[in-house]
Length: 103
Image (cartoon, rainbow, N blue to C red; front, side, top):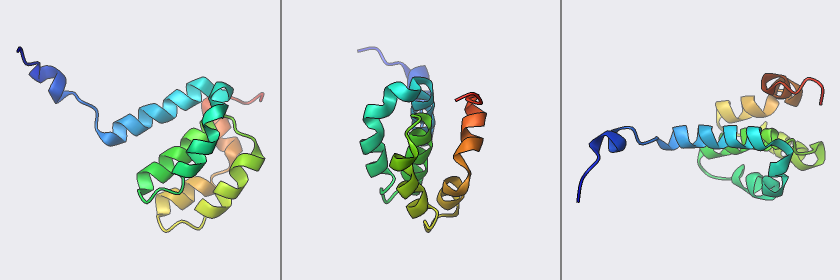
């Protein structure tokens, strides 16, 4: 069996995989709304990176405020600084970052 060391060397880290997942939700936008309940559950994960990434992905889905407002309130009191700062960043800023000014 032939080995491919170059491919193994360029394998994505878990952090890189999460970032790409968030971008995927941003690309899908409203088409990703069926994933909203699962993303909300992921915001309760013990891993701070998963909580933060799932919050970013949740914003990427264009979920309505009734879906994500309770999540923002809960995560704004998170133990991790990065998580609670992400939760306190206004959704409008995130939408502007994505280029959704008119939505």
